[in-house]
Length: 134
Image (cartoon, rainbow, N blue to C red; front, top):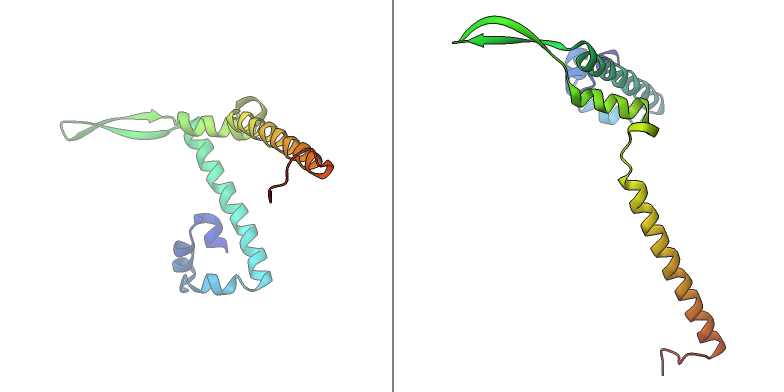
């Protein structure tokens, strides 16, 4: 579990633990193992988050080559990771709003169709409309 928590990868953790990676899927049937694995997944996610923050905020050194020769290093930052971190930290401010609009439109359309179907059913029950059999 410790190896998985640090790598987030089943095969690499199995190699470190000197076990066959397929065993993991059999062991998941054991509730205590499954619970421990869920906790290890949370730890792996924390390590990934730390690395994402480091790359977004602190940056990473990238080599600069000139005519095949290493001449300098430059620090690069990840704007993409920074955007993702902002969306996670402040979703009320940075989230995408398209889903909310689509869901509202679908909900309104379904409500209208349901209302129309109920009105038709009531008219059929009163005999105001011909039945489908006739």
